[in-house]
Amino acid sequence: MAKIDLDTVTKRFGSGGDAVVAVDDVSLEIEDGEFVVFVGPSGSGKSTLLRIVAGLERQTEGDVVIGDTIVNELGPRARDIAMVFQNYALYPNMTVEENMAFGLKMSTDLSDDEIETRVRETAEKMGIGRLLDNTPGEMSGGQQQRVALGRAIVRNPDVFLMDEPLSNLDAKLRTEMRTEINRLQNELDVTTLYVTHDQTEAMTMGDRLVVLNYGELQQVGTPLECFYRPKNRFVAGFLGSPS
Ligand code: ADP
Ligand code: MG
Image (tube, rainbow, N blue to C red; front, side, top):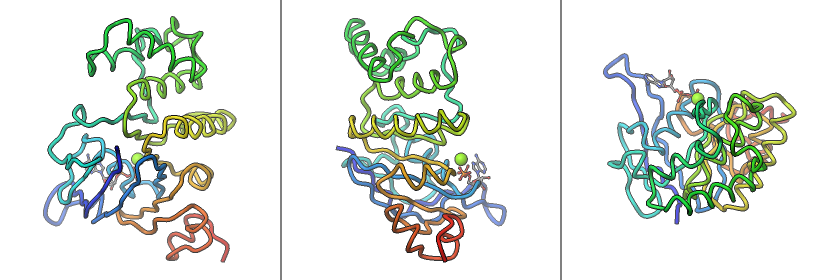
C-alpha cells in the first residue's frame, strides 16, 4: 500500500547565508490512492518536493515514508514510482512499443511475452493501440503525451508523480488529457502527486490541494475549502478567491 508521509522535510541548496530553502519544513500525509495537487508560483518548491519523493533529490532534513518504508536512503529505482514530466522525453529512435517496454525490461523479470501483453493492454487503455509501431516523431504532441503516460503506468507503480505534464499542450488537448488522467487515476487507484501552476487543473483534478509559497505549506484542503476558505491572503490571492 502506498500512503506517503512527509515528515518535517526541508531542502536547502547551497550552504550558509547563500542557501536557498527550496522546501521549508513540510509535513504532509497523503492517503493510499489519493490524488493530491501541488500549486504555487514559480520557485515555490513544487518540483523539488516531487523530486524528493521520487528519490532524485535528497532532502536536507526530515523523513519521507512510502507505504511502511522510510525511503530516505533509497534511490529512484528502489522506489515503486512512475513519473511524467513536462518534457516527456520519449526515446526518439524507439517505437511506441519499445518505449513502453523499455522500463519494464530494466526493472522487472517479466518474460518478453508478458511484457508484450502488458504493453498492448496499457496501449489499448490509453487509446494508442494502433500506434505501437510508430516512432515519436510520427505522432502529434497529444499522442506522445499519451505514450509518456502509458510508459509510466505500464509498470503498475504504487505512486504516480506528474510535474506540469500538460503545460506544453494546447488548450483543447489539455482539457482532454485532464479528463484522461483523472479517469486513469480512478481506474488504477494509484496514489498521485500532481504539480501544476494552472488554476483549472488545481481546482478540478485532485482530492486535495496543497498550496506552496517559498517552500512553505500555505494550506492543505479540498480545492473548494482552499478556494472559499483560504487560510491567508496569499492563498486567497493565488486562487483568486472571492473576497
Ligand atoms: P517550482 O517547481 O515550484 O517552480 P523549484 O522546486 O524548481 O520550484 O525551485 C524551488 C527553489 O529552489 C527555487 O528558488 C530554485 O531556484 C531552487 N532550486 C531548485 N533546484 C535547484 C538546484 N538544483 N540548485 C540550486 N537551487 C535550486
Ligand atoms: Mg517546477
